[in-house]
Image 1 (spheres, rainbow, N blue to C red):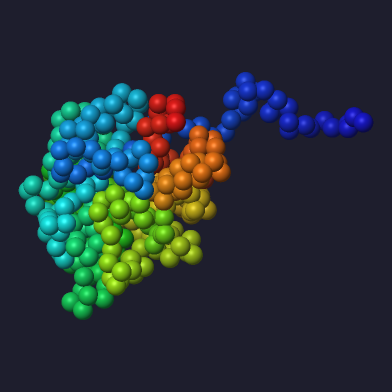
Image 2: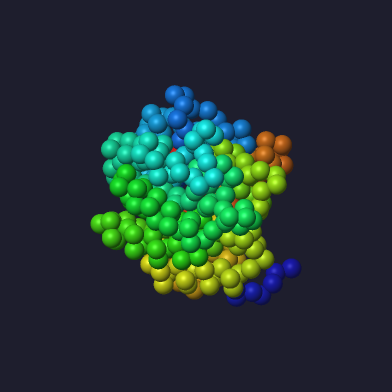
Length: 329
């Protein structure tokens, strides 16, 4: 039997050459930002819940940045793992001269100045209770305005260390505008703000918290009073619009894989570049399923990233960035 079909979509899928010609979404190192962890130890260690991801020493962090720059990755995001003895309820070490993050930024920018360095603006690496800001007097919530004041000082210090982009990840109200004003007043009007504009209270963050040594106490308040409800999309748009009005240069959705609809909605609601963070839990679950033989590692990895870009992300923070740039698993 031969059907009389003038339109046969399969003609566009009949060979690799044709499929490549009509491919709508492409992924390159230009799209990717590599998150990196640094600790104060002399050696580097693999993070158990994130196969292939290291807590770097300062020396190996610099070496890693040099290598990924040679592969075409243009930006890295640096996260410090602070020793427990330097943490306290108000995250005071975040503003200390010997802050490991400041040391790391200076070293990287000296060695590979062409790489854009992104630093988080949040207190969770430095607080003993593991939350992103200082707590209210009764300990039942995060004090929004007091936290924002500290974040402004932290952002300026990160800029002084050499950060090209500061990234408020705390989800406090008004922090983007306050940080923009603080940066401008301190002479850092060219430092960008990448706002974690739609950061959800997600179950996918567990391995990251382990990576930076931020294990929230079982009896501590959850982060749902400042991170967003995973059920809400319109609220995400509201947050994005507010951050755009306050001076954000880039807005981000976090996590990415379970929030493709949010990425698309954000893309349609803003003229700003849109970032998405493929978080530690997304990375870990692909590795775990592949190790059990349930998924093809490379195909699943690549498909997950294509989906994020197809949804509308202009840039993706992903622990797979180096592998993609290398063109291998």
